[in-house]
Image (tube, rainbow, N blue to C red; front, side):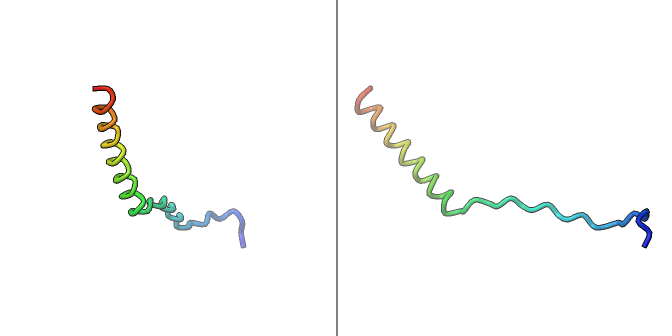
Length: 48
């Protein structure tokens, strides 16, 4: 065919970034809470 013709094509949708595993997020939250309580306990045990 003619190479000078513009071919209109539907653009490909961008790929969605993968969401982190919900169990991994819950685990990180629980570990953060436990670390907070350990830090608070250590503060009052040794510094206060």
